[in-house]
Image (tube, rainbow, N blue to C red; front, side, top):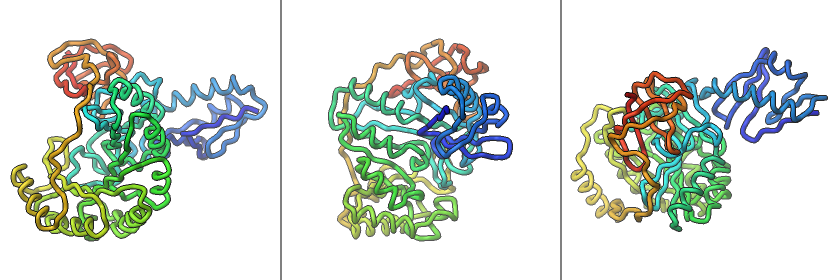
Length: 402
Protein backbone atom coordinates (compact mmCIF):
# COMPACT_ATOMS: atom_id res chain seq x y z
CA UNK A 1 0.00 0.00 0.00
CA UNK A 2 1.16 3.50 -0.81
CA UNK A 3 0.76 5.72 2.27
CA UNK A 4 1.67 9.38 1.75
CA UNK A 5 2.27 11.31 4.98
CA UNK A 6 2.47 15.10 5.24
CA UNK A 7 3.55 17.39 8.03
CA UNK A 8 2.03 20.66 6.81
CA UNK A 9 -0.98 19.34 4.87
CA UNK A 10 -4.28 18.03 6.22
CA UNK A 11 -7.24 16.56 4.34
CA UNK A 12 -11.02 16.83 4.68
CA UNK A 13 -13.40 14.84 2.49
CA UNK A 14 -16.42 16.44 0.81
CA UNK A 15 -18.95 15.01 -1.64
CA UNK A 16 -16.97 15.48 -4.85
CA UNK A 17 -13.69 16.88 -3.59
CA UNK A 18 -10.96 16.71 -0.98
CA UNK A 19 -10.11 19.96 0.79
CA UNK A 20 -6.37 20.25 1.35
CA UNK A 21 -5.29 22.53 4.19
CA UNK A 22 -1.80 24.04 4.17
CA UNK A 23 -0.46 25.21 7.54
CA UNK A 24 -4.00 25.28 9.00
CA UNK A 25 -5.27 28.50 7.42
CA UNK A 26 -4.69 28.10 3.68
CA UNK A 27 -6.51 25.66 1.41
CA UNK A 28 -7.32 24.37 -2.06
CA UNK A 29 -9.49 21.54 -3.35
CA UNK A 30 -8.70 18.39 -5.33
CA UNK A 31 -11.36 16.64 -7.38
CA UNK A 32 -12.06 13.11 -6.25
CA UNK A 33 -12.18 12.13 -9.90
CA UNK A 34 -8.53 13.14 -10.33
CA UNK A 35 -7.50 11.14 -7.28
CA UNK A 36 -9.46 8.11 -8.48
CA UNK A 37 -7.52 8.27 -11.73
CA UNK A 38 -4.47 7.44 -9.61
CA UNK A 39 -6.30 4.64 -7.79
CA UNK A 40 -8.76 3.88 -5.02
CA UNK A 41 -7.87 5.96 -1.98
CA UNK A 42 -8.73 6.80 1.60
CA UNK A 43 -7.72 9.82 3.64
CA UNK A 44 -6.63 10.50 7.20
CA UNK A 45 -6.01 13.85 8.82
CA UNK A 46 -2.42 14.15 7.58
CA UNK A 47 -2.12 11.26 5.14
CA UNK A 48 -3.68 9.72 2.05
CA UNK A 49 -3.56 6.00 1.27
CA UNK A 50 -3.68 4.21 -2.10
CA UNK A 51 -4.08 0.47 -1.39
CA UNK A 52 -2.21 -1.89 -3.70
CA UNK A 53 -0.30 0.91 -5.45
CA UNK A 54 3.42 1.49 -5.91
CA UNK A 55 4.39 4.31 -3.54
CA UNK A 56 6.98 5.90 -5.84
CA UNK A 57 4.61 6.11 -8.81
CA UNK A 58 1.68 7.28 -6.70
CA UNK A 59 3.79 9.92 -4.97
CA UNK A 60 4.87 11.41 -8.29
CA UNK A 61 1.29 11.63 -9.60
CA UNK A 62 -0.13 12.94 -6.34
CA UNK A 63 2.57 15.57 -5.92
CA UNK A 64 1.73 16.79 -9.43
CA UNK A 65 -1.88 17.31 -8.31
CA UNK A 66 -0.67 19.11 -5.18
CA UNK A 67 1.50 21.43 -7.28
CA UNK A 68 -1.47 22.26 -9.51
CA UNK A 69 -3.64 22.80 -6.45
CA UNK A 70 -1.14 25.27 -4.98
CA UNK A 71 -1.85 27.51 -7.97
CA UNK A 72 -5.38 27.87 -6.55
CA UNK A 73 -4.39 28.33 -2.91
CA UNK A 74 -6.69 30.55 -0.84
CA UNK A 75 -6.67 32.05 2.61
CA UNK A 76 -9.35 30.42 4.78
CA UNK A 77 -9.71 33.58 6.87
CA UNK A 78 -10.64 35.99 4.08
CA UNK A 79 -11.04 33.88 0.93
CA UNK A 80 -8.29 35.73 -0.92
CA UNK A 81 -5.80 34.03 -3.24
CA UNK A 82 -2.51 33.15 -1.57
CA UNK A 83 1.01 32.27 -2.64
CA UNK A 84 3.02 29.53 -0.93
CA UNK A 85 6.66 30.62 -0.80
CA UNK A 86 8.93 27.60 -0.42
CA UNK A 87 12.49 26.67 -1.23
CA UNK A 88 11.54 25.42 -4.72
CA UNK A 89 9.18 28.29 -5.53
CA UNK A 90 11.85 30.51 -7.06
CA UNK A 91 10.75 33.38 -4.81
CA UNK A 92 13.58 34.92 -2.73
CA UNK A 93 12.94 35.74 0.94
CA UNK A 94 14.90 38.99 0.89
CA UNK A 95 13.69 42.04 -0.99
CA UNK A 96 10.17 42.77 0.23
CA UNK A 97 8.56 43.95 3.47
CA UNK A 98 5.54 41.70 2.93
CA UNK A 99 7.09 38.29 3.65
CA UNK A 100 10.39 36.59 4.31
CA UNK A 101 13.37 38.20 6.04
CA UNK A 102 14.16 41.88 6.57
CA UNK A 103 17.69 42.83 7.64
CA UNK A 104 18.41 46.51 8.23
CA UNK A 105 22.05 45.93 9.07
CA UNK A 106 21.62 45.64 12.83
CA UNK A 107 21.50 42.93 15.50
CA UNK A 108 17.69 42.76 15.06
CA UNK A 109 16.41 40.75 12.11
CA UNK A 110 12.70 40.56 11.24
CA UNK A 111 11.01 37.37 10.07
CA UNK A 112 7.65 37.48 8.28
CA UNK A 113 6.11 34.01 7.78
CA UNK A 114 2.66 35.04 6.50
CA UNK A 115 0.26 37.86 5.76
CA UNK A 116 -3.35 38.45 6.97
CA UNK A 117 -4.90 39.16 10.35
CA UNK A 118 -7.98 38.07 12.29
CA UNK A 119 -8.64 41.56 13.69
CA UNK A 120 -9.49 44.82 11.95
CA UNK A 121 -7.68 47.45 14.01
CA UNK A 122 -8.83 50.97 13.22
CA UNK A 123 -5.25 52.29 12.96
CA UNK A 124 -3.48 49.42 11.13
CA UNK A 125 -0.49 50.95 9.37
CA UNK A 126 -0.25 48.11 6.83
CA UNK A 127 -4.01 47.67 6.23
CA UNK A 128 -4.19 44.04 7.31
CA UNK A 129 -7.31 42.46 8.70
CA UNK A 130 -10.86 41.68 7.69
CA UNK A 131 -11.41 44.86 5.63
CA UNK A 132 -7.97 44.93 4.00
CA UNK A 133 -7.84 46.31 0.46
CA UNK A 134 -5.01 43.94 -0.44
CA UNK A 135 -5.84 41.29 -3.02
CA UNK A 136 -3.30 38.51 -2.29
CA UNK A 137 -1.74 36.83 0.73
CA UNK A 138 1.51 34.95 1.31
CA UNK A 139 2.57 32.06 3.52
CA UNK A 140 6.19 30.87 3.76
CA UNK A 141 7.64 27.41 4.40
CA UNK A 142 9.29 27.41 7.85
CA UNK A 143 12.28 25.32 6.75
CA UNK A 144 12.95 27.80 3.94
CA UNK A 145 12.96 30.69 6.43
CA UNK A 146 15.33 28.86 8.78
CA UNK A 147 17.66 27.87 5.93
CA UNK A 148 17.89 31.42 4.56
CA UNK A 149 18.19 32.93 8.03
CA UNK A 150 21.16 30.67 8.79
CA UNK A 151 22.87 31.88 5.59
CA UNK A 152 22.25 35.51 6.47
CA UNK A 153 23.58 35.16 10.02
CA UNK A 154 26.65 33.29 8.83
CA UNK A 155 27.34 36.26 6.56
CA UNK A 156 26.80 38.80 9.36
CA UNK A 157 29.34 36.96 11.56
CA UNK A 158 27.77 38.31 14.74
CA UNK A 159 26.48 36.64 17.86
CA UNK A 160 23.70 38.04 19.99
CA UNK A 161 21.25 38.38 17.10
CA UNK A 162 17.63 39.06 18.09
CA UNK A 163 14.98 37.59 15.79
CA UNK A 164 11.69 39.45 15.73
CA UNK A 165 8.77 37.53 14.20
CA UNK A 166 6.83 40.56 13.04
CA UNK A 167 4.69 39.88 9.96
CA UNK A 168 2.20 42.06 8.14
CA UNK A 169 -0.56 40.28 10.00
CA UNK A 170 -1.03 38.00 13.00
CA UNK A 171 1.76 35.43 13.51
CA UNK A 172 -0.37 33.15 15.71
CA UNK A 173 -2.30 32.29 12.54
CA UNK A 174 0.84 30.59 11.20
CA UNK A 175 0.38 26.84 11.42
CA UNK A 176 4.07 26.00 11.84
CA UNK A 177 4.90 28.66 14.42
CA UNK A 178 6.21 26.27 17.08
CA UNK A 179 8.68 24.60 14.71
CA UNK A 180 9.69 27.98 13.32
CA UNK A 181 10.53 29.31 16.79
CA UNK A 182 12.36 26.10 17.70
CA UNK A 183 14.38 26.12 14.47
CA UNK A 184 15.34 29.78 14.80
CA UNK A 185 16.35 29.45 18.44
CA UNK A 186 18.64 26.54 17.52
CA UNK A 187 20.73 28.79 15.25
CA UNK A 188 24.05 29.45 16.96
CA UNK A 189 24.11 33.22 16.41
CA UNK A 190 20.57 33.78 17.78
CA UNK A 191 20.33 35.03 21.34
CA UNK A 192 16.59 35.67 21.54
CA UNK A 193 13.34 35.19 19.64
CA UNK A 194 10.33 37.47 20.10
CA UNK A 195 6.89 37.62 18.50
CA UNK A 196 4.68 40.65 17.85
CA UNK A 197 1.03 39.61 18.28
CA UNK A 198 -2.40 41.09 18.92
CA UNK A 199 -2.80 38.32 21.53
CA UNK A 200 -6.35 37.39 20.58
CA UNK A 201 -5.41 33.82 19.59
CA UNK A 202 -3.06 33.23 22.50
CA UNK A 203 -3.98 30.40 24.88
CA UNK A 204 -2.23 29.04 27.95
CA UNK A 205 -1.45 25.83 26.06
CA UNK A 206 0.03 27.70 23.08
CA UNK A 207 2.07 29.94 25.37
CA UNK A 208 3.51 26.87 27.12
CA UNK A 209 4.38 25.30 23.75
CA UNK A 210 6.10 28.49 22.64
CA UNK A 211 8.09 28.55 25.87
CA UNK A 212 9.17 24.95 25.31
CA UNK A 213 10.24 25.87 21.77
CA UNK A 214 12.48 28.62 23.13
CA UNK A 215 10.46 31.82 22.72
CA UNK A 216 11.88 34.62 24.87
CA UNK A 217 9.38 37.44 24.49
CA UNK A 218 5.81 38.25 23.45
CA UNK A 219 5.21 41.83 22.30
CA UNK A 220 1.46 42.22 22.63
CA UNK A 221 -0.27 45.05 20.79
CA UNK A 222 -2.75 45.79 23.55
CA UNK A 223 -4.30 49.22 23.08
CA UNK A 224 -6.88 49.32 25.88
CA UNK A 225 -7.76 47.38 29.01
CA UNK A 226 -11.37 48.54 28.76
CA UNK A 227 -13.72 45.90 27.35
CA UNK A 228 -15.65 48.18 25.00
CA UNK A 229 -12.79 50.40 23.91
CA UNK A 230 -10.53 47.42 23.20
CA UNK A 231 -13.21 45.94 20.91
CA UNK A 232 -13.68 49.26 19.15
CA UNK A 233 -9.95 49.72 18.52
CA UNK A 234 -9.58 46.09 17.40
CA UNK A 235 -12.41 46.63 14.92
CA UNK A 236 -14.28 43.51 16.02
CA UNK A 237 -16.60 42.46 18.83
CA UNK A 238 -14.70 39.17 18.99
CA UNK A 239 -11.73 40.71 20.81
CA UNK A 240 -11.84 39.44 24.41
CA UNK A 241 -9.67 41.47 26.78
CA UNK A 242 -10.69 39.38 29.81
CA UNK A 243 -9.46 36.19 28.19
CA UNK A 244 -6.23 37.84 27.05
CA UNK A 245 -5.49 39.18 30.54
CA UNK A 246 -6.03 35.71 32.00
CA UNK A 247 -3.56 34.17 29.53
CA UNK A 248 -1.02 36.96 30.07
CA UNK A 249 -1.15 36.44 33.81
CA UNK A 250 -0.54 32.73 33.28
CA UNK A 251 2.51 33.54 31.14
CA UNK A 252 3.80 36.00 33.74
CA UNK A 253 3.38 33.43 36.52
CA UNK A 254 5.41 30.84 34.58
CA UNK A 255 8.38 33.25 34.30
CA UNK A 256 9.57 31.69 31.04
CA UNK A 257 8.44 34.24 28.46
CA UNK A 258 8.75 37.98 29.02
CA UNK A 259 5.66 39.99 28.13
CA UNK A 260 6.00 43.48 26.69
CA UNK A 261 2.83 45.46 26.06
CA UNK A 262 3.09 47.65 22.96
CA UNK A 263 0.05 49.92 22.73
CA UNK A 264 -0.35 52.41 19.90
CA UNK A 265 -1.28 55.81 21.33
CA UNK A 266 -4.16 57.16 19.24
CA UNK A 267 -4.91 60.75 20.33
CA UNK A 268 -8.47 61.20 21.48
CA UNK A 269 -9.15 57.45 21.35
CA UNK A 270 -7.09 55.76 24.07
CA UNK A 271 -5.35 58.58 26.00
CA UNK A 272 -6.65 57.36 29.38
CA UNK A 273 -6.05 53.75 28.40
CA UNK A 274 -2.32 54.41 28.03
CA UNK A 275 -2.09 55.38 31.69
CA UNK A 276 -4.12 52.31 32.70
CA UNK A 277 -1.74 50.10 30.72
CA UNK A 278 1.27 51.72 32.42
CA UNK A 279 -0.27 50.97 35.83
CA UNK A 280 -1.03 47.39 34.78
CA UNK A 281 2.56 46.85 33.66
CA UNK A 282 3.88 48.24 36.94
CA UNK A 283 1.58 45.89 38.87
CA UNK A 284 2.27 42.75 36.82
CA UNK A 285 5.92 43.30 35.97
CA UNK A 286 5.45 43.52 32.19
CA UNK A 287 7.70 45.48 29.89
CA UNK A 288 6.18 48.43 28.05
CA UNK A 289 6.82 50.17 24.75
CA UNK A 290 4.28 52.85 23.81
CA UNK A 291 4.11 53.44 20.05
CA UNK A 292 3.10 56.63 18.30
CA UNK A 293 0.16 56.49 15.91
CA UNK A 294 1.42 57.46 12.46
CA UNK A 295 -0.75 58.05 9.40
CA UNK A 296 0.23 55.86 6.46
CA UNK A 297 -0.77 56.32 2.84
CA UNK A 298 -1.92 52.72 2.49
CA UNK A 299 -2.93 52.21 6.13
CA UNK A 300 -6.25 52.57 7.93
CA UNK A 301 -6.33 56.08 9.37
CA UNK A 302 -8.94 57.10 11.95
CA UNK A 303 -10.11 60.70 12.00
CA UNK A 304 -7.73 61.90 14.71
CA UNK A 305 -5.04 64.55 14.94
CA UNK A 306 -1.63 62.91 14.83
CA UNK A 307 0.88 63.96 17.49
CA UNK A 308 4.20 65.27 16.24
CA UNK A 309 7.30 63.38 17.39
CA UNK A 310 8.48 66.16 19.69
CA UNK A 311 5.12 66.27 21.44
CA UNK A 312 4.96 62.48 21.67
CA UNK A 313 8.36 62.19 23.35
CA UNK A 314 7.47 65.03 25.71
CA UNK A 315 4.28 63.17 26.76
CA UNK A 316 6.26 59.96 27.31
CA UNK A 317 8.85 61.79 29.38
CA UNK A 318 6.10 63.24 31.56
CA UNK A 319 4.46 59.82 32.07
CA UNK A 320 7.84 58.23 32.71
CA UNK A 321 8.47 60.70 35.53
CA UNK A 322 4.95 60.32 36.94
CA UNK A 323 4.82 56.49 36.98
CA UNK A 324 8.50 55.65 37.37
CA UNK A 325 8.29 53.37 34.34
CA UNK A 326 10.82 53.44 31.52
CA UNK A 327 9.09 54.66 28.37
CA UNK A 328 11.96 56.23 26.44
CA UNK A 329 14.53 53.98 24.79
CA UNK A 330 17.22 56.16 23.18
CA UNK A 331 19.58 53.23 22.68
CA UNK A 332 19.08 51.32 19.42
CA UNK A 333 20.40 47.99 18.15
CA UNK A 334 24.04 47.63 17.22
CA UNK A 335 25.12 47.94 13.59
CA UNK A 336 26.29 44.83 11.72
CA UNK A 337 27.34 43.84 8.22
CA UNK A 338 24.63 44.09 5.57
CA UNK A 339 24.18 41.76 2.65
CA UNK A 340 25.41 43.17 -0.69
CA UNK A 341 22.81 45.28 -2.50
CA UNK A 342 22.64 44.12 -6.11
CA UNK A 343 20.51 47.08 -7.26
CA UNK A 344 20.48 50.83 -6.79
CA UNK A 345 17.67 53.31 -7.32
CA UNK A 346 17.62 54.24 -10.97
CA UNK A 347 19.08 50.93 -12.23
CA UNK A 348 17.29 49.21 -15.11
CA UNK A 349 17.36 45.43 -14.81
CA UNK A 350 15.75 42.30 -16.19
CA UNK A 351 13.93 40.04 -13.74
CA UNK A 352 11.67 37.00 -13.84
CA UNK A 353 8.08 37.59 -12.78
CA UNK A 354 7.45 35.11 -9.96
CA UNK A 355 3.88 35.73 -8.77
CA UNK A 356 1.18 38.29 -8.07
CA UNK A 357 1.91 40.95 -5.46
CA UNK A 358 -0.20 42.12 -2.55
CA UNK A 359 -2.24 44.70 -4.45
CA UNK A 360 -3.90 44.55 -7.85
CA UNK A 361 -1.45 45.79 -10.44
CA UNK A 362 1.57 44.57 -8.45
CA UNK A 363 3.79 41.60 -9.20
CA UNK A 364 6.72 40.03 -7.36
CA UNK A 365 9.80 39.55 -9.52
CA UNK A 366 13.06 37.74 -8.75
CA UNK A 367 16.63 38.59 -9.74
CA UNK A 368 20.04 38.09 -8.08
CA UNK A 369 18.38 36.26 -5.17
CA UNK A 370 16.20 39.27 -4.33
CA UNK A 371 12.45 39.77 -4.51
CA UNK A 372 11.28 42.98 -6.17
CA UNK A 373 7.79 44.51 -5.98
CA UNK A 374 6.94 45.58 -9.54
CA UNK A 375 4.29 48.06 -10.64
CA UNK A 376 2.63 48.34 -14.07
CA UNK A 377 3.78 44.95 -15.33
CA UNK A 378 1.72 43.14 -17.96
CA UNK A 379 3.82 39.98 -17.79
CA UNK A 380 2.72 36.63 -16.40
CA UNK A 381 4.63 34.49 -13.89
CA UNK A 382 7.63 32.91 -15.58
CA UNK A 383 8.10 35.72 -18.09
CA UNK A 384 10.94 38.24 -18.03
CA UNK A 385 10.27 41.93 -17.34
CA UNK A 386 12.44 44.97 -17.79
CA UNK A 387 12.28 47.00 -14.58
CA UNK A 388 13.52 50.38 -13.39
CA UNK A 389 14.33 50.30 -9.68
CA UNK A 390 12.52 53.15 -7.87
CA UNK A 391 13.25 52.11 -4.28
CA UNK A 392 16.36 50.49 -2.87
CA UNK A 393 16.80 50.56 0.88
CA UNK A 394 17.91 47.88 3.35
CA UNK A 395 17.77 45.32 0.52
CA UNK A 396 14.08 46.06 -0.01
CA UNK A 397 13.26 46.83 -3.64
CA UNK A 398 10.44 48.12 -5.79
CA UNK A 399 10.40 49.07 -9.43
CA UNK A 400 8.31 49.94 -12.45
CA UNK A 401 8.05 47.98 -15.66
CA UNK A 402 9.60 49.89 -18.57
